[in-house]
Length: 488
Image (tube, rainbow, N blue to C red):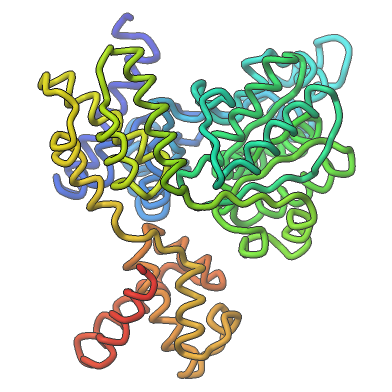
């Protein structure tokens, strides 16, 4: 690659921007929030970065957008907006270019967009959006979000906790292959790491392998929001909507992250697809009734389809997952996993499937790097921090609202309301404090979940409660009790 290539130029630009940010915020802040960011592309006035975790995406977007854009302006004067997307398996989710851009109305076109519009107009046959959907290659049809090639029905381990969801997913795939619709929409929900994304990926794989002409779109909620917002800003929202409504199978993951106008647009898209008898499969971490960012009509639509929960894995399913992953490692590396080690991992790692995968990977790495045989003592030593880190229950904001509402005898809807009476304000502030202390949600996201409040309101509540705890020993003990109730 020549040093003057676009990739080299972009790399040099990013190195200069990183240097400015480090000088501006200091080594510690830079290491915490900026070191793992990567520059994906510059499009018009939009800076597109990627980050390895959802929390980092949300935090940087909410707290450092202006500072990052300003650092870019030294080299790119037109830089005005920042978007941070999740990096999956080392790759950022690609931008959705085709339909939104070419569907922009001619009267609104900009010089930069003109070549794409002319190319669409001069090409023969169908209207631009329809033609792009019809001509989409197999890879393009699955390019909405990053697809994990390992997540197929063959690699999914089923048991009592997930067998209904597994069966429904296979039935949806078979129906889509045969151009029929059985349950619609289908909504799969569970806490993190129990296989929702695996099933959505598996459906997409099965259908695309059986019929490469199917128009399949798999989108995570944050990807859906990114493309909808970008389409609106480029005055091509109509094209984006038409592109979605012409798919044969729409799969939306991480529904709980959908916010604002994007949630409204999803509701319109859902209605159009259901009316046209197109299959829709959605996954989220809570039942439809708890998706407060969606309006009642959309929640009702989702509830009116087939709602499939995945429950916490029991010992038998955890053991089966560990056995499957160990068998795969044995085939690849020729190592031996004694039954006692498999039993220990299944008993000790009780959180979710991803941690079980991670536990086996750690044992494989320990064996490869040190030459030690895989034994229970090695597992105890290698997995100690993983087990400690996962001992605490994952607390959700919905759990906090329920506990605080019951403890203080304040209706949940009043905690989310604009009421300012003391009997409501104090429990609301305590609930916000607990959300900040016990969850990984950002301040803006906590504000949205508490009736659409600004992040500064959340910060004020957190600091207020911290001061009250210092001043009031009894209140401090009360809040510790609430914490224990939430973590049990």
